[in-house]
Image 1: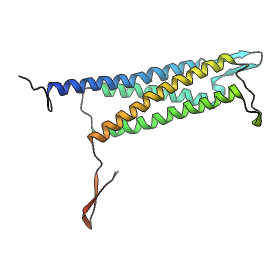
Image 2 (image 1 turned 60 degrees about the horizontal axis):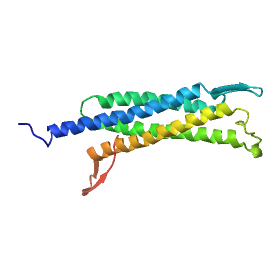
Image 3 (image 1 turned 180 degrees about the vertical axis):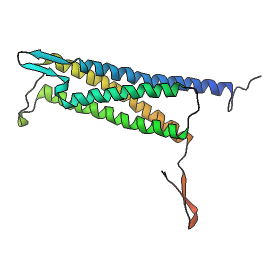
Length: 193
């Protein structure tokens, strides 16, 4: 008769498999969101009597496209790695923790700077003689706004992934202890390279 609990038990293996599947899906959803935002922004251009406007004309939107592309690629790669049924190692846990944090902030920055440019495009700023462009290029602004909203959806998933990877790292592995040679009783948690 098989054990139902404990290390190596059937229940533990099913829980691990379920958690792996959930994390894989959690990593694939932002990939789909990032690709949607990326494709929408790549196709964002408009020409009219006032001229033409494309995403590539604005550095913030180019950054949004690049950040979404990098995050989509990372999401796919990390989902493949997580889906593989093998035990997690400390270097792998640290790598996921670090990259999840970095990409969360990168995609957040891309979304934030795009929203700032969209605000200026909608409202303008007379102090610096920046006129509101969305009155003339409404279709362009609509697509750019939709792309930014989708990007913030991806940001929410990356924030959850950051929490998951930090929980997996810090619940499984503790910080190494540093002992000073002169004082054997004093141990301080420290990270050494």
